[in-house]
Length: 335
Image (cartoon, rainbow, N blue to C red):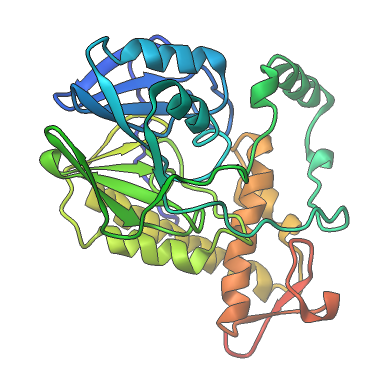
């Protein structure tokens, strides 16, 4: 039976760039970078009053920097700029915000492994995309500011202060505890706001969609372990960087675990019909999704496939046994 996730997608009415107080300790400023990959845009959080922390400064848009500086009151200072992970919609603006405020940046560390740009190891779903859809996608891409046309890893970011699991960053009236949650990225951190029993969940757990897990830096095994790790806490609310807050987060996390387990089961079912490539079944598995999302979805399926290979339940029939995005896979007797 297919697992149904009860997503949270209603952000209500908001204005891009406006500072909205969402709890007594949290303000949110949503960046005007909506895309199929960022939902309504990057939600940057300002925590506390007086001496504040900023979480996920966002993409390198000058207008968003101006909005953040306007949201910080004339009598306020920025004590810390924290980064959940190094993707282009989360971390690049950090250097400009720290330069403007004198704050230090905090994060787990620089970006992890980046795969080679192999032109022979790319999926192609263009045969499924109509001419009208291609025209629409191109027009939307061309309308983006140049700063938003590059998506992916931010390999330039290096934090001033490196955090590990359990480290504390605090200010007047607020305490943020780092929770290392690798999977989406190897350097992904969530931040627990102790005073409100809430969690800034970055891209690890989002209300509007499931997270992409893209090798080599992303790991499905790590991602599943990190989901399980969150169940050890009793947070009342999650504040993801994209989309609205998530109430009753433990039940929601369990649905994510069930969803990924069911995805793995479906992949095994496809492989039971005979050797195949990931691109053979992504269109069916992700039917109904924006077709632009099929490409990152293929990376998540690849992460599942690597997990199957590592656990001895699948093997590669070509590429000298090296699992790639475009490899042909089959089940082993262990499956």
